[in-house]
Length: 453
Image (cartoon, rainbow, N blue to C red):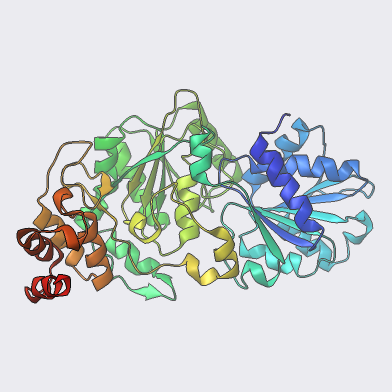
């Protein structure tokens, strides 16, 4: 296969990083081809005489990696339940839990593995493996913040970040999104640690405005599009799928307890276009390659940047005729973490993991009252449906629980064009108008004029 320039550069940067440290995290956005990059790195390593082991945590990812490796001319020996490979292979593909159990029993030492590649390394289950390894380790992920403890920077030495989502959208390797949301207050939902409590969040999503909200928004803004719907818990997912079916939408539910055969069948039905909506709880969050997904429904609220980015990434892959995907954000997650495509400093988060959980909401955007589209806060007219708001109404949204800095920044952005000049060139009337717009005391004009004199 021929790799894109950004993929070649990413691999080169990883090689340079390994000259300094033995444990490296490689970060690249969902849909940028980490599976292809993984297979190419494995191919190059095998060509140098290394024995490579690639590990993952989910059967769907396991199957995709096997296909990618075969495409690069590599036939891996499998390490999974019921599979016991013989020593002598150049490449092994393993399920992480199976590998850890056999490693604790001394059953993998004879394989002579000297390089490990871990896919979706942000999952906390990898720590017990990496902690026991003495060989070089490469962990790949779109979101380098561990879902468990300890954080990645405690057992990896450095991180290599590839190009951003914004860059890949410009190069047409990913597609942008159009976001629809809902005006709802989640500030009083009970917390469990740094995340919303599941029971409390489920109770919130059973209130009328949210209970039917995801289905109503889909019917209004994305009807007929193939959608992945991520829910709070299994019961919520089943109820949401039922609501869709009652409206004639072909919908189904899948979770961790669904049998391997049924899961495979449901995902295949979705790929074939026989399902419109697939409701789930974390099953389609990472490593799921469904490029025809045209809509992502976040039927949950979260303080986790990782969960937010991973779910949105399911809709970002390119497909024939696909110009963008629709995001239906029922949890107002865009306020906490930004819309899809906004720049994220993953190196900073790798070194400061606490930054991946944000409680302070952003006040840069708002939902249109008519169509629900997420637009810039200061816009008085919705560019999608034409609905209008007055300046006073917008300012009221901003002033609610706002800091002095937020208020000042907003007012600076909305200064009328004729007042965008230095104080020294303003007339008395212009100074009065400027001071009134910024909310300054009337004495401010007197101070400015006295200073000028």
